[in-house]
Length: 342
Image (cartoon, rainbow, N blue to C red; front, side, top):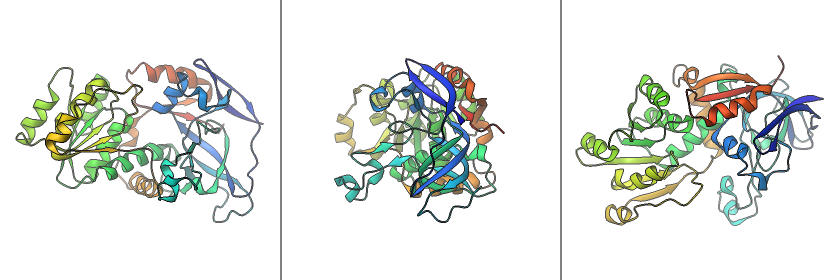
């Protein structure tokens, strides 16, 4: 038996014994070192995904660990090899998959929501979900590869080029990672955020940052760009205000990448899309090449300040309190759960 964290519904987490799943043909069992908590986990904790789960269920998907066992028909993964998981299970038969867009399969299973996730000591997953990690990258830092892959996908969807002016609305973990990836691409980035802790951190990381509750972000960007506007806008806040301002921030023929998951359909100034010939671009999860880029960035010495983004590492028994801490929106960025005993 091993230990796992179960979501039971109604903001209740229990930690208890769980029988490891032996890897079947094509599967790999991973000893999970760390599993990060993300915004999707908070949505899950608040019951917004109960209809997709079989409660009680292990959740979590931002993981790093080492191979502990392999099933038949699997080669190339030595026991002890460091890996991370791209937690998507497409059907490979729907029109989206057949068109080469299996990451947004019409019947996509997200492992960690639709199927048991990574908040457990041993997690068995299909071998095709694995990405090898370099030994130089610590497993602690590697637990941020999955959200970093989200940011890499978002920036790639936005076609960010060197010298472009980029606005990121929302300074949570994904917003900051988008800003970091865009800066690595050579862009000038301004980040919009209302949380004082996050604003301070963003500025300490060398970004221009403003509080849109205190300053008119549209006026600020127009001033900074000589009324030209932003080349690319990333809407990551998921707020009504962010949805309203995003089309006003973009330049003529600018690009807007919608990253946030809106619980309710927001009001959007679509007149600006017509008036300025704007591109409105959706960005959802990631593709294998985004993981490849994320791993390369994460492993490059001095590229990304992961030590500043990880606020705390908690025991599995502290998961429920960590979720409450994150939902309060206070002085916290990324919290990891240590899933193995040693």
